Structure formats: C-alpha cells, structure tokens
Picture 1 (spheres, one colour):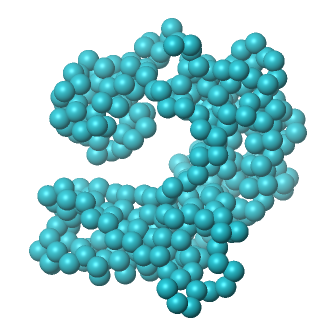
Picture 2: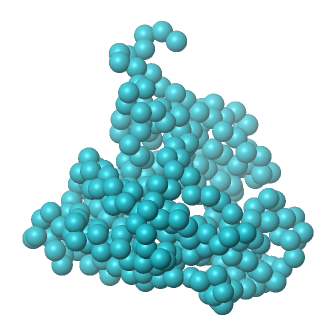
Length: 355
C-alpha cells in the first residue's frame, strides 16, 4: 500500500486568539472566552490563562478562581465561523480532501497536493505561513502517514509548532507514550489497562489481541492497531456531524436521584461543543448505563430545537422520568447528547402545530 500523507491543522487557542487579534488591549493578557456564571464553561483560554491551569470545558467559576485577573469575553460564534471559513479557503489551495473536526481543526490528505509542493511537510509549512500572514493567527500542524498519528503530532509542539512523524519512526515515537494519549482512552479505560499492567503504548503493543478483545470488545482490536500505529480511516470531506455528546463514569454506582449534578455539568459541555457546529440539533438524548452494564437511552425532539443551555439541561433532566427501573437501581454512567442535526434551511419556516 502506498504511504499516505496526512496533515492535521489545529488553530492555537482559536477563539481567544481571534479576540486578542481583534482587540490589541487583550494581547499578552489572560483571556477566557466564556459567559460568566455558575453554570458556564470555558470555551477557550489564551496561553496566558492556560499558564494558570485554565482549560477548555472547565467550569467558568473554577477558571475565575485559578486566574482571578482573567479577562472574560462572551463568545462570538458568528465571528469565529467567519475566520474558520477563511482557514478552509487556505486549505483548499492545497487539497480538496479536507475533513473539518470543528471550527478550529481539520485533517487534510495531501498525498497528492494542488500546490505542487514536493512533501507534506512543505505543504504544512506553507499553510501555517499563509494563516499567519493573511489571518494574523497561528496554527500548529502534525504530519504523519495517518490521521491518528497526525493528530498526536499537531499537539507535540504547540503552540505555533510543526512536528513530523516519518513512517520509519512510528514505533520509536509511539512506544514511550502513556496510553492516555490514544483517542478514546479516558480515565476509566486507562485504569482498566493499568490493572493489566499497561501504562505505555509499548506495553499495550506487547499484549495479545484476544485478551484485549475479551476486556474491551471491538475497541480492544482498535487499541492494538493504534498501538502499532495502524489507522486506515480515510479523510472524508464534508462529513456531517451525527451527534455531539459527553458522558461520565462514576467512581461508585449511584441511584437515579443523585445524577442531576452530573447531567447539568454534561449539558454545559455539550452545549458549548454544539456552538462550533453550523447546523442545529433537534433531538436531546440521555444515556444511562446500569451497574449490570445495560445501556439505556431516552430521547426527545421538542417542537422547536433547544435554544439555550438551560433548555437543553431541562429536557435532559426530564428524560429521567422515562426511566422506570425502580429506586433501588444503580447506575455507573450517564451521558447527555444532541443529535438529528439540520441546516437552517431544513428547519420548518413556522412552528409545527400538529405532529
């Protein structure tokens, strides 16, 4: 098989950087893009704010405690979408195989590029220079033979960095990495792997596939392939978002009545993430996993889509009423999601009066 050339471009602290670019008084200062309030979460933080430990998806009230001098700016998503569109126009000069992940990052397949540059590294360098010169922003880039490695590489020299993983260097690069760097390996999976004596990607590579499959199902096979640096997934242009969700696994199984704070926190994260999506989500989903590992989902499509985080939270909380396993039932996981995305043009022109 021919070696593919994949570039992952990740704009540096995108929302905060746009704010600093457009307002000189914010440059060099700790900027937090978020609405103020007990239930708000951080959409983005400048690197000056990150030095205090502020991170995206963190509760805004915690960010304020960590960085009392932070300047809070309410997000301006139409402006961020416009800048994101400008970055895509730069990408299109080099390839038509562009798969956006959000407003601030995308995969590009430059195995064959339109700009006639001899290497993927030169393409990545050109894109970063054009973003800097034309948009007055910085981007980090990762270059690798597949999407999995390119995404890790783009994070390697952030901010304003470029890192290349050559095919012959994959094993040397991957083996020392903690398994938490693998996509999909959260704290719970990481702990389950640690119970098997696996701390690094190299440890994972030395485990046999049947053991991984028995513990993690199909994802166990995927874990093993990623440990080898194998990822055949293609760069798919214009891949529509099917759903946006967030979930938490509890340290101890809990009854349904104790899940409300978790639902509120997850709804905040999902609402913040949905603001990056140009389409409108029409359906709210609540996911639960019982202590016996049975997965339950409940969903509701209101007459008009949720227009605020409070509305999303209210619907998600109400979906608990459709779970009737009794007060003694315990749950190990809860998730909140949005699905059934539509463009503004696909939405009804008038409220629906009858189903």
